[in-house]
Image (cartoon, rainbow, N blue to C red; front, side, top):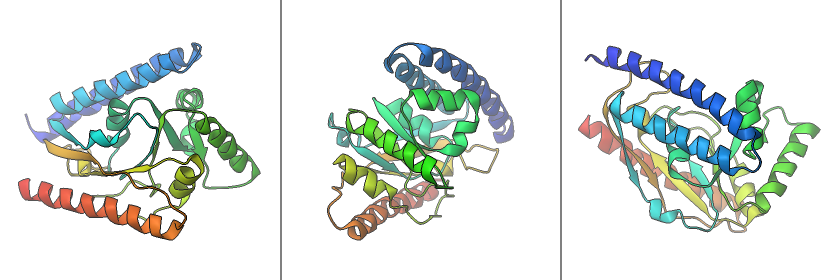
Length: 242
């Protein structure tokens, strides 16, 4: 089977699974509590991980999960692919999200994220945006879930990086939680812009937690150096194999 044909089958499977679970999770979101919806999102992630492996040929080498303790943390992850959040919801339970407000314009997705207790960030700012963030932070302080955030706020091609936003520091500092960095080479197999997926083994690695001390600038340098340094090593190893 050629890469193009295999990628076509994957694209069809991706949308069928995603649309089906969007409907299922929207129904689960109506039920009392967050557990039914949490299970639905976890099942979606696991199903997509299965599709990635057996349809696209993308195998995930998951490392460092020992750093995911029972104590809630802030998970600061490199974001190279649309597959990144799928692996996160399939791996980390329970999990809360920091999401951009552009996702809220999609009726089902917005409803699901709201019920899931996502903290919604806006690039436009303003009083309404600040009020949503404050409300979300109040919920998280009494919440025992890990919180996923992408510090760059952008998808990055393998080897590319964007400035890290300091919201990750404020989130961890205000919640008094350690930050678990995550490095990845998933972009080598599932490029954010390419239709064709590359069958191969890629790595998603949770790294040693970092405590958000009083020095914000020092924390941001350490976080960026840790994530980008390990990601570069994974990419180099992956390119050497490919």
